[in-house]
Image (cartoon, rainbow, N blue to C red; front, side):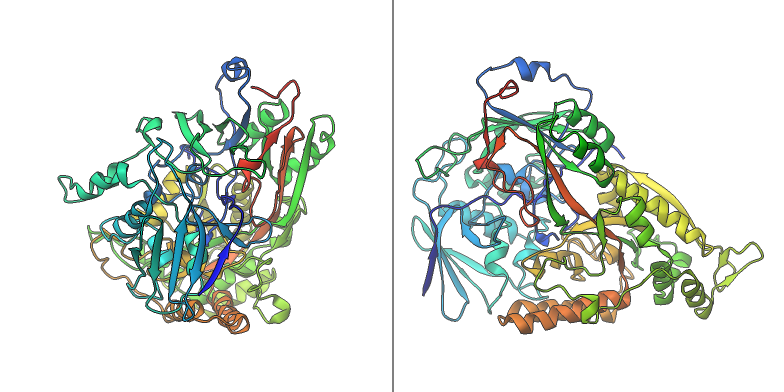
Length: 622
């Protein structure tokens, strides 16, 4: 047995903490599946129309950070969350965590682990004296409950099951209690991403949730599915992370306070986190976020390209520093709904006429050639970005570059038109594109309202497509509505979205690419709790991607794994279920009074927030 431990772990705070909104991508993934997927990882919060005076005058000795999110929380039930924006990285830990700088795995709730020689058994030892935020002991029984009764419970539709799936079948690890502090996972075969996947999965409180899992409602579903919604009194939400929810005011803010039972201490024996309270202000508009930051109401802000030059000029006077971690690890894309299935009322999710266009490869390729991404980079992203060609982030050791043979689509309007003509499309006297049966090529492009740069990209795509005779109508929606269309009702046509891309482990984007995955939005299949979809088809190239991911998780040799994921990237580039756009550079503004920040592309701005300190000045205590 090979053992590994560290002095203490750090909670992984993905920049996927960008928190959902409630007005008009992807959870995501996702984000970035991600997964990653990585998964990843979140952008914190701001404020609309609410009065901060009460916070600035209350409790003069309470240290506080005011952050921002574009959306209300979708749920307070971790297992049921499908959004890339949430408070969960602040209120929950898993067995292990990922260092936001190095990517190395570190102990979290588990102080150590050991891996058997055949790599099929991983044993964890929990820290002594762990407690939940209500003071109750956190034990191996909570770990067993979380995995057996929630993540691996087929009656609970949680996306996290995909992270535990071994290959493409319904085969999962088993977990058993060894003693008071030790548990063991047994895998049916070696599974390279398993240990890292555990870092994305929170441990949940059995003493609070077990009864809801065991109880059945009138429809025969576990009452767990309606437990800990956003209507729940926040103090009832029990966690094990650095903070706990103190209050939630819809459309205004989430307030979190320091968890008195958090397990981490610094090297001098001081209890973490250092900062007493976090205010996550809900502000959908990036323009309003900018106004609030410049007025001093916010302590940190993710900087969009259009904000950069203004805020850079004011950096010294505003007493903040702008950090740049390079291209964002998330992926921005435009994609079509390739789903040929029908809903329970026998209505196709996509108009069959349009579905035929979308499922024609030449049509998707023509759209790719028609989008001027250089113009998008220069105009929308102010030159502060890079063209993205792959579903894997450029920082990843698994990234396949164009120089290594990845197929790319440089802007070429004439080539786009020729592809359409060769496929049987025609142009009428008005130079409008019509299909084989004389139908005008027209569809709706869905985009979320909360992200200005993504909305601007959708507008440019609309303009670019008009130059090849395609009429694209914009559908600007609240991100909560977007998620429901993508993952539930499936009634959408084209989507300008985003997901997270695993920087270290490609498998973290598995839920997006696996044909049966919970985030396989471009051809979403039957999900747990649903009746089988009628007419749903899986293409040969989707099945090949499934096989590649199944092979990738079994292969332990880095060079051989890279070859597997190279082939995956080539298939995506050739078949174009989604076409990648531009990744902006990742900028974060942080007030200079905040110490110990360690902003990185991998961890984001807040992965080590429990180590943040506030120096004393006039704005120390709000």
